[in-house]
Image (cartoon, rainbow, N blue to C red):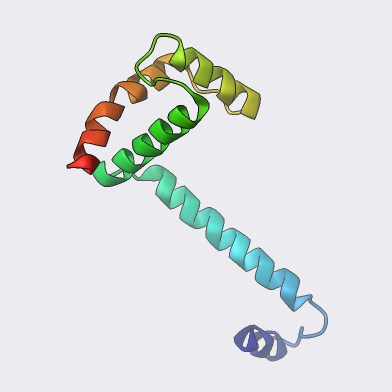
Length: 107
């Protein structure tokens, strides 16, 4: 924060600009840039397996069998409730990968 204050003083705008608001903006912009970079990068096998295991845990918690008929449809409805639709075919494809992900972690 001292560096930001020094910069604003050098620019002759210290006291004219809310330094804390500016710091919040810098953090937000930096976070958005990082998220954009992450979104463009494909998942590594470990990351993918971790997410699949998390999905498996959530299914278990909700009493859903990831391999059972209708589970993809139910999860699709949950994503719709969230306001972030994911097609049931896409979900079904991911659910089929769960057994292999679990096997790699349980060895």
